[in-house]
Length: 85
Image 1 (cartoon, rainbow, N blue to C red):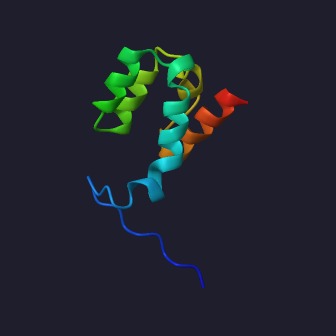
Image 2: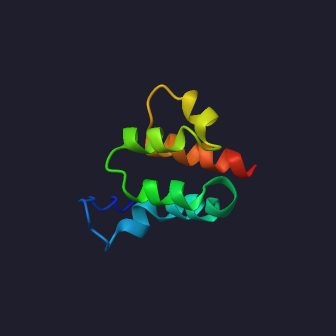
């Protein structure tokens, strides 16, 4: 029987890496080639996924995000992985 994933609460740094570490690492890894310092700084200030879409729309991720009807974390992760491929 699988262990259920821990519930995430905003600001809960104890389980952040378990739940969101991989997508964050992808974005950080691509920071130097796809995102300017100002773009990355703006991403750190985002509070909603719509804010993320707005900030990424004028970067190399813009085309991938334009194809998505609704932005979800797994979709953003998929777009980041496809950029690497």
